[in-house]
Image (cartoon, rainbow, N blue to C red; front, top):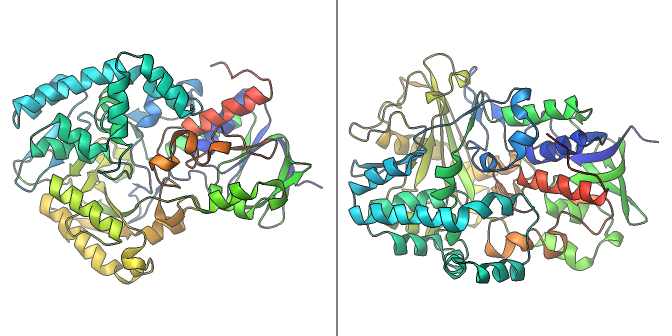
Length: 523
């Protein structure tokens, strides 16, 4: 006896689960999403965390990657209430010596700013962008919105291209190596490097040098990044409306505890309260792969090596996030010239960046951790009362603080004071007169907020060379298919990983449709 039936069940109403569901429903499949929490959203949520009327993004604050792909257009999300605001400047860096450096959508305008620090680096930045246009740009979105290719295929193609060997060299390098090779002035280096590793990558991590061209520079100029008007939650809300418009639905407060497998095929699920839902044609799991394979599927249907591998997936860094509600506009120190910039990196210095991540590896905090400040309300008045503002301040941090994750709970008050002092170094008017409410989220809080955020890693599993591309989450299931017939994967543990792209949802849906012999939905 089933409590509900659908042709396709999707587990998890994060933005990737909803993206997959919306594509499948639009293709004509009766699709049902089961969400553990009381509301949709996952890592793209918005809540009144500090005070009534102040809407803070709970995790994802920047919707960059999704701007480069087909999801927004394919699903016509503007029809379902999604409105993006596109900041320009893109971001800025501020430094202890009172200087600042701004990246604009315009490369020319950005280069003029770099010239104040180093004419040689300004020319190097222009060359970097030329290389991005020639070697990276066309393949960037195409490669992310399709299943990962084998390394042999990638390198075979690169060997035949004009810039292939140079690309190989950059991709094999660390972001720090690439930045040091391309630029010579320390402010410029810190500005580019901080943006390039905004995703949890370590600055000295080999195999991640391509992020300098994608996360740090080229992709930002080409595609920009968007603020969903009203908050990050507006993206999953629009996806849910799209799903329902095509005959699908979402059931919330329905945590799944078991995948029903019969004869090696996925037939449905059982929720924590005993409800049973049938999946007639496919089941798409937007869940963390560790509990999925180790707790929710009878091991008789799985290879023991795969189960063991999923138990050994590695997480990356977690974060400390400081939310502030302010009664007035944040004003930076005189001379910095970034009062109108939504996204500001406090890059500190190259030395601080390197030292901070070295301490993170040891499980320690770093007192002068480089951080970022995002003030969405400079452009989006729907997130706070008129004339008021919300700030999102975040930096990376180790989950195992001094080897004891529970230590985060004991230092929370101290941490709150420290974060306030650090912000005030650059924004003096953040004080007791202007602060309406404040909240600090530690790695423990982040882990507790979402089952996907294992050990506080908002990417589900770390973006490490051993867990990227065809290796994410494991070579045998990297194409979104699993050993269980009809069971597919999506979300942050699948290629191309975390952040707001919709790519795992898109790619998973295309795989399901291909296996069912159905065409992708027409726009």
